[in-house]
Length: 150
Ligand SMILES: CC(C)(COP(=O)(O)OP(=O)(O)OC[C@H]1O[C@@H](n2cnc3c(N)ncnc32)[C@H](O)[C@@H]1OP(=O)(O)O)[C@@H](O)C(=O)NCCC(=O)NCCS
Image (tube, rainbow, N blue to C red):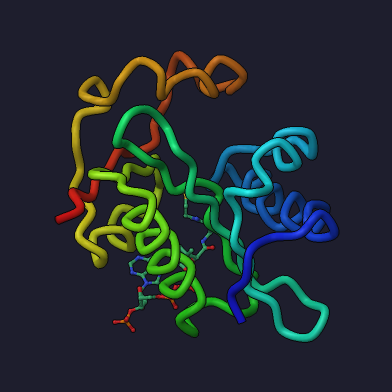
């Protein structure tokens, strides 16, 4: 079941995201930053177990960002990532966004939803505020992708 995140989900979200961050497959999120953006998150749960999470953040103007998409390593390839991305896109549409971007190491996954690779330089400067805290700030190797919403 996919539902909006609750306060009680914050620690589990941090655990899942940082599990992949330790493998350098995602960026670390502090508990503080998760609480601060908790309303952006949707989670997928079964019983009491967090299976996946994703955030749809408003970035600037009509641009949004899918962030912190992660699925439990034992529950991958079961359609959970798809559900979370489709939910995030629908939410972006409902908000009136015209474009959604993501920074990712999984371009083939996002390409399935119509995201296309773009030059990072084409994203507005405002997008880079979080990069100030990233250890890879000066050598970012994530791939920028954009989905144009019709
Ligand atoms: C990337 C990730 C979110 C995918 O989640 P998932 O639940 O395994 O994906 P789904 O089962 O919903 O897959 C949907 C489709 O994409 C395909 N797919 C899954 N992972 C893929 C990948 N890494 N590359 C290309 N295609 C992929 C699936 O085969 C499936 O195809 P189908 O619809 O033809 O059957 C998950 O592997 C993950 O958490 N990875 C680690 C964290 C990460 O890299 N997050 C990405 C943001 S940086």
